[in-house]
Length: 226
Image (cartoon, rainbow, N blue to C red; front, side, top):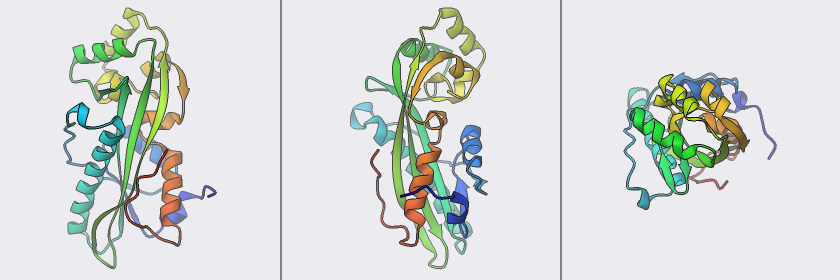
């Protein structure tokens, strides 16, 4: 299917980004879509790592975020047709999941492990529809994940320390952001969508929305394959 302009497909929907991330907001802005930001109240509490693949974890968190906002909107404004986008990003290497560091030592541990090595940045996305003429409850219409491979250069202890002391790691999975100063310096190679590594795979999102919102209409929940 050819990629189509996103704005006409979303006409008639109240589009909501269920995320407080400024990076995801900036990325969705690139699509020329009018949308509101409503941060989710969903608490990301990762289950034991042996129970979930990294891909399953980000999809579960993305669905939780989008459904939380969708249920609130379906109660507050049931007549409007809302389309909610939820996303969650983690870093993974050799089966180990890295979320946002909780303190300085955690950030140092993550960056030391990533130093000079290739790792995966995985983002899960969930698209929810709710409201409208049928006053439907929040309905998951598509979920998917995207993976980008990032390789760090060999980093000196001084560079890692400078990165951590600068405060960049705290709200970023793996302790860095590809689009931020530290990540831009440390990343030697990127394979895959760089915007995915920044928090939202825009190309894949546009393709999935086009596939679901064409005249055939949204169907049941489907996890698309990468």
